[in-house]
Length: 318
Length: 318
Image 1: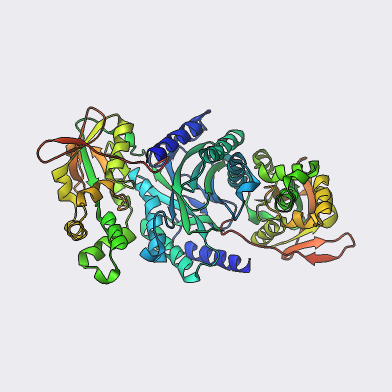
Image 2 (image 1 turned 180 degrees about the horizontal axis):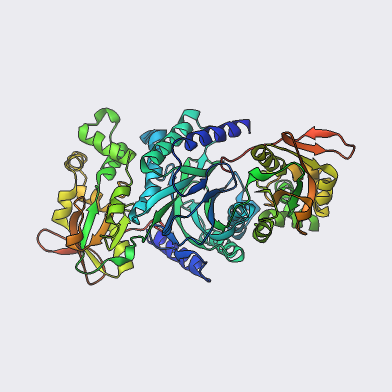
C-alpha cells in the first residue's frame, strides 16, 4: 500500500506538469475531475490497449506504449474534428511490474498529452495479469464531423499514411532487429509512435461531409462510413497504391507480403478518412476514390474492374 | 469478426433501449459520443473492475458483475453531488467466454444504467486474458462537493452502510453456499449488488462541506478528506458500532472476524462519507464523529482513548 501511495503521488506529479487546459476546473485528486464546458458540444471516447492482444512487450518500450495508446484514444477526437480537452487513464499493471516500465508508460502518456494539448486529468490504477491501458478522452467542437454525412459525388480523402504501421508490425513479428534496414526501422517507428491528426481533423471540420479515423483498417472504416451514410465508397486502387510510402513497398517486397493488403487492412497508423466535395479538399488530403449511390466498399482496379472489399469489425462504438 | 460484429450489434441494441438522457446528442455508433453541455459543471471519472483482483467469477453472476462495476463508477459522481449524464464502457473479455456470461454482464450494466438514470452511450470491446470492465461516467452539477471543504466543528456524516459488503466478501471466501444463513446471504447480496447513492449525493449538495464515496474503506477515504481539507477526522467508535448492521455483527461473530475492521477497511458498499454543520445534517445521514483541527484519522474509543487509524491507498485519482 505504501508502494501504491508512492506510485499515485508520482503519477499525479507527472501528469500535473505543464499548463492547465481550458475547460478544466479540477484535475487529479478528487473523486472525479471537474470540467467547465466551453460553448459548443463535447465528444467523448474510450479506447483500450491490451498486452498480447494489441501489442507484445518485446515489441516496444514503455514510452512507446504510453504514447501510442494515448494517441489512439485522441485520434477519435481528431476524427470528429474536435479539439482535445483532457483524458482519464485507467491503467492495469501486473503486481511484479518493473518500476522503469510503468514509469515509462506514464512518461509516454504525459509526452503525448503535452504534444496533443490534451492533459491527463485523472484516472485509476489497478493490478491485473496483463498490462492494459484504457484511455477516455473528451474534446470540444462546435459541430462534430460524423460518419453519416457522405454524399454521392463526394471524393474520398485520405489524411496521413496507411499500411506503414502494419508493415512495422510485420517486421516486428517476422524479423530480428539485427536484420532491420532503414525502411524496416521507419515502419517499426510508425507502429510504435503513431500521431493523432488533431490539427488536420480541426481543419477538415467545415470542409468534410463525413470522417472517421482509421483504427480498424481502411477497408473496415470505409465500411463504417458507407453504412452510416448509406452510400457506396469506391476506392481507386491506383490512387491508393500511390498513397503507400515507398518504404512500405520495399518492406512488403522483402517480406513477401502485399503492401495493398496492409493499406486496406492495417489500422494503427491512425490516419483520417473523410469525404467531401472536390473544391473543399484541403491541401493535406489526398483523393483516393469517390462516393457513389449504392452500398458497401469497392476497389476499382486499374483495368476498371470493381471488386467488393472484405471488411472487419472490432469495436462496438468504434 | 462476424462474431465481433454480432456482439457489437447486440450490445448497441441493448444499451440504446430506454429514454435518452438530457445532454446526450449522439450515443453509440460514431467515433465518439456527442454531448451538449447543460449549464453548470461536468464531473468525470473512470473506474476498473478486474477478474481475480476485484472479484472471482465463482462469487457472482455476469449480471452482478455488470451491475456492481457500473454502480462503483457512478458512485464517484454521487460523491460529488452530481446528476449522472451517461457512461462509456470498455469491456475486456477472454476469447472463449460463454455468451451467456458476457451478455449477463451487459444486462447488469444496462439494468444499472436504467436504475441510476445514466445510460451507456458508447464504449469499446477487446479480448484479454481476464475479464475486466473499465467504466467512465460523466455527471452534471452546479457546484461539486469536493474532498477539501471539511471544517473544524463539522460533524462527520455516514450515508449508507459500511462493512456489509466486506462481510459478504468474507462469506464468499470462507463459507460454501450450502452453509449460508440469512445474515450471510444478506451480506453477500450487499457485496454483489451495491447501489450508488445518487439521490443522497444530490441532497447532500448544498448541505455538506466535503464528501467522498467509500470505495477504499472508511478509514482510507476519511484520510483522503482529512488530507485534502488539512484537518483531523475523529471517528466515534460507539457511533460507528451502532452504524454497523446487526447481520454484519452476526456474520463477524460466526466467522471469528471483527465487524469494526470490516466497517473501517471495507469499501465496496459505496456508502458516502461527508462532513457538515450539525444543523445541516439531512435525515438520511448518520453522525459518526467530528472534524477537528489537526491532521489524520483517529478513532475515539468508548473509554475516551484516541488511536490513529491505519489507512491504505489504491487509486491515483480516487
